[in-house]
Length: 461
Image 1: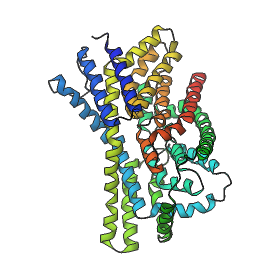
Image 2 (image 1 turned 90 degrees about the vertical axis):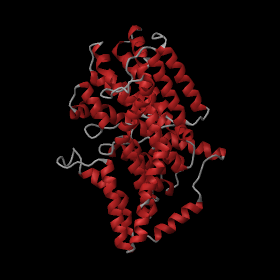
Image 3 (image 1 turned 180 degrees about the vertical axis):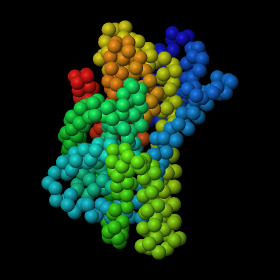
Image 4 (image 1 turned 30 degrees about the vertical axis):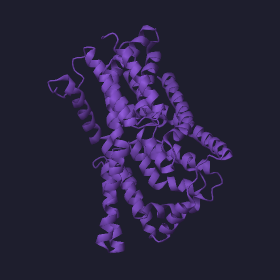
């Protein structure tokens, strides 16, 4: 049974992919796929499927759910929590009209630009620059959805083009602010700042520029094609008029409120103000409270202002339902792939085929990419599999930082290609389209960007 584990795991992966194509409810699909993979591991003789530091319940059948519980707690305390707060903040800013006011003010100069698609490319670069301090893809999407997405609609871009770009802006997260990048550096035994300057930036900068160009070309092409076919989804004019009226009645200084978290994150981070460091969730909580106080001073109605302030929790609840639960089961699925031996099997196959360090690193990156696309969680895929980077590098006498970075690149560039990724679901909701429609717009730019990034990594290192 032990020798059959990887093959049975591969069958589960194929069936999971088939279920996603058939539009089976993804959360429950990944739940049972993850359980199946871990059951295969137990039947194959794996003595312990639980993460390091988690004690067994004493019965392996219960350990399956102890594993889900442990992974969910970890995700809820990190990525999941950021997504909850970001969703709540976006909902509150919309509730008090701050987003609409920001849009109405910023639209004026942007509407004078001759090429909306150049603005689209500039937004992609902006998002990647913000990635130095905002390290959550979902959090970044929420920030841009609150502040930039309506602007893009206002200058004549389609909602789906804006969604595709916003959903894929954070294709690289950087050390030392990103937990993922720091984990990659620590796994490889490299100082985070060394990892950023020596490894990440030489690869990330040209790869991001290529991805930006591909986005501009791809979105212009698909908009033209969909418009000709009569399938281009446009914003409801009534919605636009309602928002315009709301913005007109809102004080101009409300436009600054959605930017409060961004300003705080720019100032209080390890690169600028080293003694005081804020994370995304803390900055958004601060922005929320500032918003309530400003709204209270303007409206002078505690009942109305506090009622609107509650929109934060409503937004968080919506994120829990639509995104965070998906991350929990995605982590279970990724753990199952590793416990069932499929990841190790693929790596050993690459080694035995004589692929060398470069070929094996590409295979490992492909595994990470596959898990990311299937689960929608680059974080879950990367954190679960990056510990193998040093052993892969050691087997060929190579640099573990290179292997770890290639794995990180695959997990982040391919996240926007997954129709079940939280960030894709978020932007698809804003655009009012299906997640697969967004993926149709992201797959070419992101895949080209990944190929360029991996190629540069092999050339430089």
